[in-house]
Picture 1 (spheres, rainbow, N blue to C red):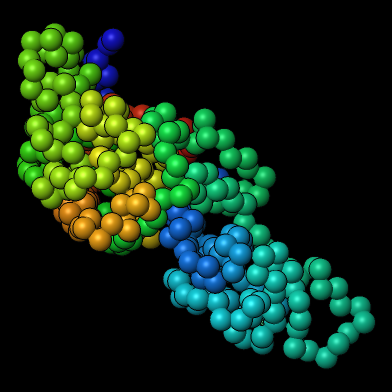
Picture 2 (tube, rainbow, N blue to C red; picture 1 turned 180 degrees about the horizontal axis):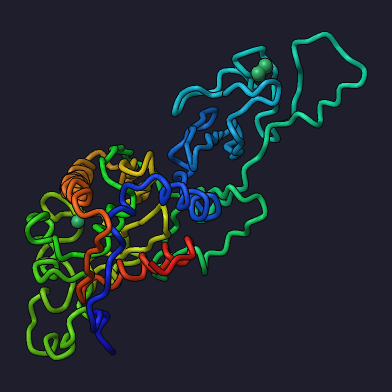
Length: 382
Ligand code: FES
Ligand SMILES: [Fe+2]
């Protein structure tokens, strides 16, 4: 099989695309307004709880009712437009949704207007004032929304990088062990670019590069090297075969999975160490020896992105009192903080040479695909 790497260098995006408000507006209009946006795992919201989310200057609310059914609406009252849920998350105290302004009440599941607090009018048609629903789809327990009401969810096309290992995992029944948030002062594309290559791994992630020896060679896949096949036959070290260092079982501080493994994907993880899938523009998911980590990226402004990471475990792992979840959580946070810090450094450099473009080297083929996706959406060749 051929190597993945690029055969020639290629131009990166102009540096002003990482802070220009006009570009950011176009990205919102042409990407975030019509792509499937990842919200969270269903088990990351408890029943009778809500969560709000800003996408493309719209605020939406995701609600799980007492029967654990999900409904998603624009967070706006149909009376005079008040926001209904004011916090990022919280519990729903009444059996109905109540607007904080004049107390109109709505059905939690359907969003239908139940009651106003005004004098009754004969000709007032309550049906016209239901909360506006958001198009959503729950795939393997993962909630996705689309601001286009008629968009169909198609698993074959929404993931740019898919791996059938995920098909074997009963993800909807996994439990959420931890959620971590961080706002990073960089353009959302810079964080994606960082995720898409390992040229930075040895110096930015020394601990991770020890755990995944291939990363010491600045490669994400053994096939990135043009002579990967010969190297694989010549050397037995995991640097040339992929996988974790000898004796390690998962991405954790000490490499141990404490006796808990994702048996369904044991073979894939043994050979590769980790498996990734991703969907632009908002989510990548990693499968590791004993857990799954999902990272969501939501732009706050052209120069700020919000990261939300969820750690998912089989229920039996989290219910084992001997299992120390911090072993994997702290390792994930260590790596993400390292990426966040260097992404901010990258951002600070782009202002000086505004019309210049960077250059993509052979190992940066995923970034090339990412840039092609952005340019296609924005319909520009520049
Ligand atoms: S704006 Fe919501 S009840 Fe008046
Ligand atoms: Fe990294």
